[in-house]
Image: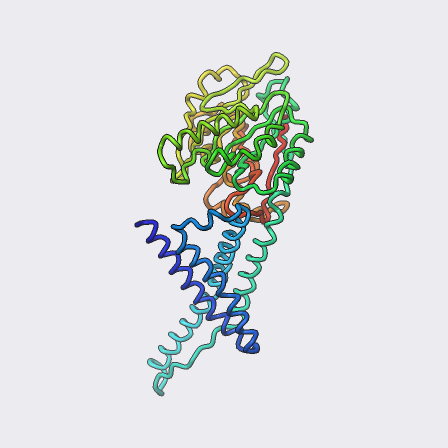
Length: 415
């Protein structure tokens, strides 16, 4: 019942938004020929009608029969259109507020100051604001379409981390950090293979993966298990779980089926040769000296994200080790618990945010909507000698693209 109400509310809201935007579009089309207006009207309403039909037939699961790539792109285009219209409507709303204020001011003037009766003269909509809204909304949609081509454009970020407590044997250590593979979204195996080779070409001493191997189901890795099993490093490959790895975002026929899926996913890590750390740690030895690598299950400080991680279990036994690296999927864990309760964690590696797959990064400036939710959302952060690095994600989820925030392979060099 709740799902039906939510779907109905969304459909009604979407149609109201479509009508609101179309009223402005109809104004702008007045100088055009009748044939052009008719074509634009049909093109405008067809996606909305299609989206409504998809929602209405949702219980029949008809889209489940579509090829995965088709399903991903269709949903992305529809959501992109919705966001573009929503953006354009902000400008239309500003113009409507201007008209309302103008009308209200005129009404007060005629009633209080003028000798003649009040006449409600029509106030036309601003053509400039209308075109501005259409232009910005259209640019957003165009940018989202352009971003489809960026989802496999892996960028290598080379980051040097200086820490006085690092043992001499580990100075110059080259560690590759990747996160958020989301294999259920991947559709181009060759492109992923190129990304894996890009990692291997960096000749890392050790590799870290910080969660969300899949979207929901362990079976999503069937096609890519051999690809990621190629990742090898002299000191090993270490991983942890992310919030999507537990299958919490889909319906399962039984609790047993959900538990079996998680166990299968754990075995996938083992089959690839990755050491999955489940609220535990390992000591890494190099030339007789040691550092600790801790890995916990997902622990999120934000609402609706589970706290499966148990830091006390992972940390216990590392007291004597001089340098500690923590693999924890959600960066909100850093301020919420790690900085306060575990001051000897020297470096925490996370992912989770994807940089929202949308934003702007130029020298000296970066922005993404996700920064209004996560204070630490991409790149390197410091608190004294303690560091957090948030990887922007190897894969993608939902939107099959990247705008301004490219998929990332991080090369961390301990110096």
